[in-house]
Length: 290
Image (cartoon, rainbow, N blue to C red; front, side, top):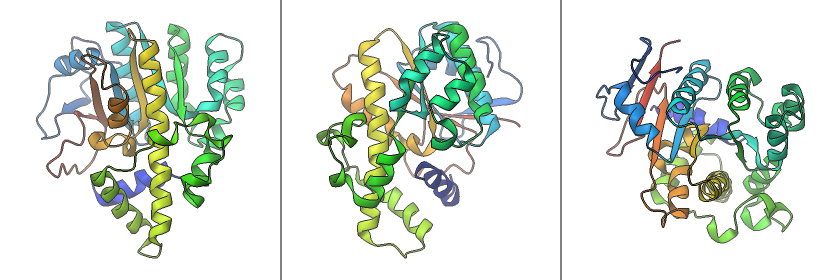
């Protein structure tokens, strides 16, 4: 993945219908080492995982088509699928629940979750996935930190948060900023974004906001996995939150380290110019033609 693409991913972060017998001809799957993989093998491996991350570029229609197809294929194999969404912030879980229960319409969900103000990408990218979840009675999980909290941390740091601010985020003791490789990667991106004109204090706050975002989503995934041990969780999140496993996945694993045989799989959708740097950027690279 090029530096420019990573900058784009992190900048966005802050502010198949596949059957199990044959793949659609326009879709191919690779390992991080660019070895072509059998779709049947990959889907079997995904179906055996507890949590699957589908890393998207938010404004890519191809990514969202692939997400729906993968979810549909997994549901054929394992009906107990839950869909966890970066696109919805945690205070708006009740709106998702009301939508699934048929108490509000899709338009009302969009309004009551403040989707347009808080996410801002095209509703129709995600609407088919929401409709499928409703039709199949699949849980929808709101993952994200409230925008107000992320912005406050980016401006003033974690220490600025009040008790009221903390009701939708993990305890301070669970917000870990000690991943050196993750810090280094984000700092390079941050410096490129600001062309060297921002102070180290500003970076620290930026980094804390990013980590808070990851930890908040990881906490919610871990909570659901604990209370619903027979469900498979499919996570829809930006690529920047899952690459190398440093963002959300490692933080879920830390919370569930005592869960026997817990398996997570990372799928990067339609990546370009992958550079593994000695580390696997994901388990699978899923490419779909427009």
